[in-house]
Image (cartoon, rainbow, N blue to C red; front, side, top):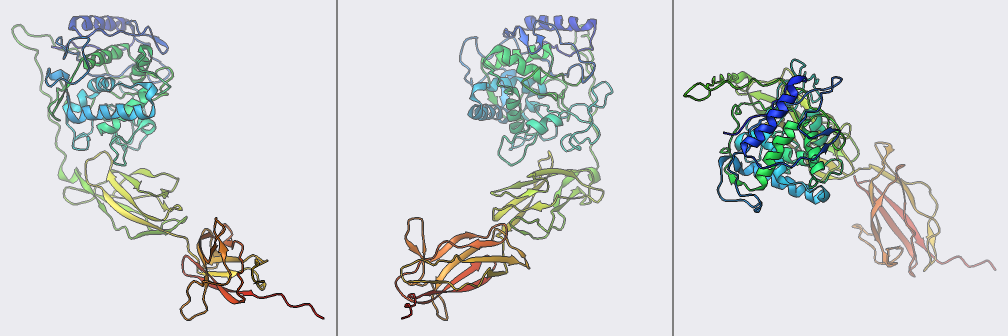
Length: 558
């Protein structure tokens, strides 16, 4: 049976004793030898425990302290490939293993100098959540129920007041650690990632959490192939030398080999299986500098001694009561949101509203809902955000902030989903149309004339308006047209020049400026005299027709 150690006690004389037991446990377990760096941040990794900081969050977080078994998955010195079979402890559930490897590849693509090994993520995932409770995740990698640490309300733990309005941990008064890698919400707000490309950053999703952990460990220009940097990274996750030794032992164990097992069949640490996890690490702070201490946790009770001739007596944990249907979230639905359309640069008049319902179909209050903008758009919610989390009210509804259109026209999608839940989202299609003008006119009334083969001396300038207000950024098309009942592009008379200097008689890449003004490029006359028409049409259908004359100059008087 794997040795247990690492449950930190309060500071005092017991600290050194615990550290000594930890070292002995490592030796007795037969675990792979972990070479510790002599310096880790501001602390020494020599079997001592860093002193808590009484002026801030103090102590350390509990974690699952099982050590690797005596029989390693492969003999030392062999490859890190995946054997087909191995001990139960060396098996990692398929989705969990895939998430660690994907995080390694993603980080390597953006921060190759960090040299993040997936086995380090596996070691941390083992002690933080027992590989997400033995791989109990859905097809997207999200845990079937949230993994939550204890409430950080100052009673036996650190006092960390709510930072996420309960969006991730369901507690709008205090924070709790969340997910397979046990992030505190305030840390997740900075380091959260979208590891599976679903447009969300969910700490309960192993792909998102593994990538976030990888980037967190690589902070501060660390090179994890260097022992000292690796030690600093692990200590920044949980400021405890015993934690470092435990992670190091699993890291070395997994480097010797592991194998994939089906989701839901992985080994689970004793006592793990409910909806809570062990620790609120990584702690808030600035990775890459001195490791920040994690919030203190209650010391765990020592195991009961074995009875002669029998195993360790255990007391079955009571099964938590199942919430009644009236308090169980069944999903979210559209609460009457109308068509979402806006002109570029304007606010959408309609606001997205959803309703959380319970299993009886009634309203459910205090449900965190995340609204996310996706697609090729520069539209945002008020404040410039493309995702926001709000909580339903007493009537079960919640309304998203005002949606603001950018300059990109076309369609995009807004998703509304119950935060941290594997429930279907409500999707809305929003449309941004081009800026419009309902009137366009010349800014002067000068006659526009030119001699055959010459250029027009005066520039054509027009102003566009919409409902008598300046129409900025409106698309305008200018065309030399025939004088017919059904005008078409003229093939003679005045013309523009393209970038190559060739004659063109239609221009489409024109827009009014901030004052609604458009000045046309130079206009040239060919050798055919006559009176011609120039038509300008705006997005929105406003039109003005301007007369152009090509005539020889008058002969001088005798």
